[in-house]
Amino acid sequence: MKNKQVEENNLIWHSGYVTRKHRNKLNEHKSGLVWFTGLSASGKSTIAHCVERELFSRGIRTYVFDGDNVRHGLNADLGFSREDRKENLRRIVELSKLMVDAGILVFAAFISPYREDREYIRKRFKDDNFIEIYVKCSVEECERRDPKGQYKKARAGTIKNYTGISAPYEEPENPDLIINTEKMKLEDSVSKVLELLNEKKFISSV
Ligand code: ADP
Image 1 (spheres, helix red, strand yellow):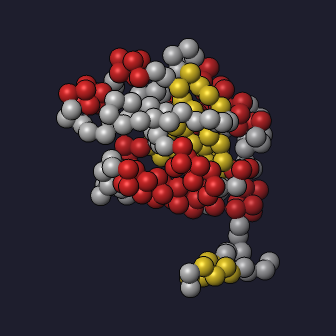
Image 2 (tube, protein in one colour):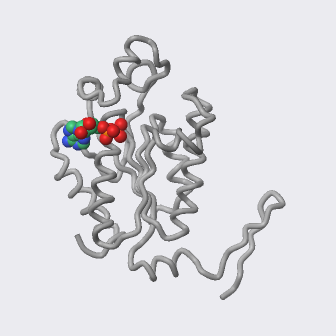
Image 3 (cartoon, protein in one colour):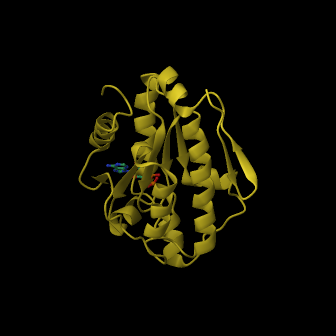
């Protein structure tokens, strides 16, 4: 196999002999990034973790990146200003790229409220290994659920720049799938995601 080196800003990208395609073949499934966007408490993490549990039981190599968890470690130095949100996403996307290269089907559950940022994510991936899912739910319902009590804090002004309350959420214009969690039961949402993964040939059978 030819060992390709690509020069960029005087840095050399060293391609290994074992590529993503080889790893996908070994694993018997495609790797890629499934990006869940939507308001806090819309159900992104809940759905992503349930899909992962189902796929894991079928021997598929998966990993879920969860907004809050990443902010505890890798991105602990970042806040919620526009610039910090951008950097938060940039790091997650680059980490996801490496994991996809390593053969993993990655699920990322992030509010990611800005269209510009989501466009950037899509561009960093090739279309055939990226899926965008909009987990849709009204602010009123998310606020009613408020599993972490954050909407209450945002209303009180204790948390600033809170998406849906004091910061905008720009709805995706052309996502691969929309899941409305006010209308759809969790099990049905999970089935919808599995169907899409099957349709896009990430997994062989559902
Ligand atoms: P997010 O990751 O979008 O912030 P979470 O998954 O952490 O949201 O929280 C969503 C909350 O809504 C959970 O407490 C979950 O049990 C609840 N919920 C109620 N109905 C649904 C549904 N149909 N789908 C997903 N979550 C739901």
